Length: 216
Image 1: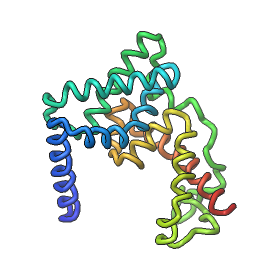
Image 2: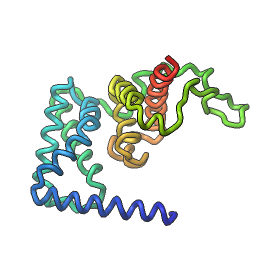
Image 3: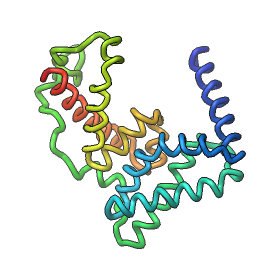
């Protein structure tokens, strides 16, 4: 591990320790920011296990109550966000069982087998970079321009919100929340292969939406 990676890991650990201390001290502003950051991802994950958005919202609310009640017992063996998600998944599974809705998350990877993007858009096995895109959107802008223009971000987030629940869960966890592949597989009880398939399909559809926006 490089010095930069070590420094980043140490900074993240220090920030999480500070956040945990503030939460345990009853800092309402810190709790509100935590909820705002993770709510959408938690809702997407919950909807894989229960019937309908309203029930998923109830599961998320129950999870936050459990988080508040369990903060003093949190030992830090996993990251705070992973601990919160594990509580959510357990509650969602229990609710799904009561409603006879529970479906193994891995099975959801096969629910939408249609290619997210036409296969010919990718480089073939004979190419030096097999599997990579053959071409990029025609109107990519300089990074500083993209940072100033918030519309591509809004387009991407709308595209994520429109994804099937399983794809949305994985892309939110990986690309929005910053979970590692191992953390996603462990939290959702999904194989690395299925996680990779779901993430690829999700990223491809988000890219397609951005491509349409940038080239439109």
